Image (tube, rainbow, N blue to C red; front, side, top):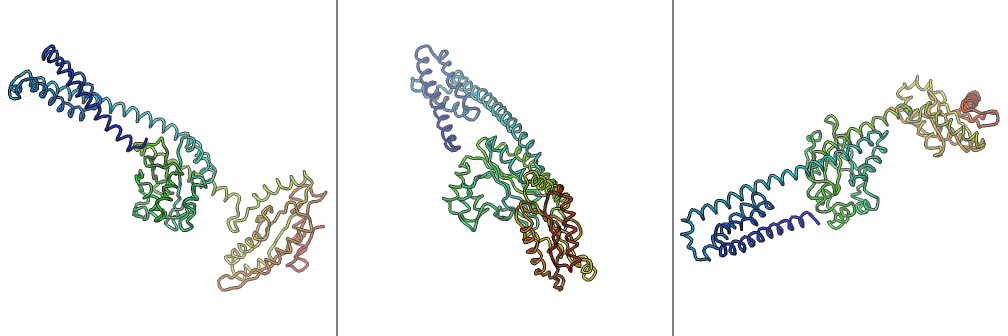
Length: 473
């Protein structure tokens, strides 16, 4: 039953209670008045007091006015004059008793209902807080943003909630949808329009009607018009398509949807939309606190990933550093030895790099190294391992590769490097590379030994004139 239908039902039921109470009062009072007199007829107020209790203070007062009118009408119909009735103290006292009973019972009923509602809301809030605490416990262990997103989606799903997260790009002053619990088939309803895809779609605060200078104090918000929110984000979509999309992601007219800012130390990280059947409008404060915890966990995961990258990645070339390469390489080399599979190694060293640094400067040398790394990365397979060994040297490890194939790969790399031209500060700089090749054999049982052999072969290519490939025998 929708919220509007439930409200209509309550209104109809309340009117039925009023009508029923008045009817019972009229029937009982008429019968008791004729049979036993006014003293016994006073007990006819019992159905009215029951109506007071159900309807509360406001409804009780309305019922009181109607019951007083009914009471006087019955007496007038039984032969009393209206002016005479109003002159009788007993009648006035009876009407006062009805009014007083309406006030007392109605106020008691209203207070009791408020108390019960408060207890119900408190129990619901405690249950929600307990559930969200379990969610935050799991997402706080995430080691990177992708792991965080999977954990958040899984844990919110367990408590019947869905979500979408758009992260803020401070350079572009825009948001981009990055993480979502929405399934791919539901996204296709929006993504079928290539101008407004959901995944990766960017939007600004202006589209949401929020001034940019308020981004660090963005308020939590309950969305009342779901289609209007989508139109603000994606433009003027077809209403039918928007409704299909909302239906597919379990958002209906009565569904509570919160838009919550992810803010950490007055820094806007993004926006979280969350919805579910168990949410109510009174949950906004609790969900606002939860959003702060989500923002903290997301930033922690991002920083942890950044530290890991710094520990395992060469900052200049963005290639794996020596430590990272050796960690992965030893694993692959041990596997090749155990399974008796081929494994080769290339050692690459730029020719005349020192003299180029002396001529053009170290900043130019850094750009050349970056171009060199990119050429190497573009000319290897997905199964190959590449890393910066040190200085201008790069190592490439080739699993499942015989010596003949390794030589071909090395020569292709040599040609690609020599054909590449770096344009730096008006200088067109061409570089060449000397490459040493070695492959695993019965005398090479450790990765360090294989790399040393490739290094010796690389020096042979240097001594033979550079810009060539030499093979370790």
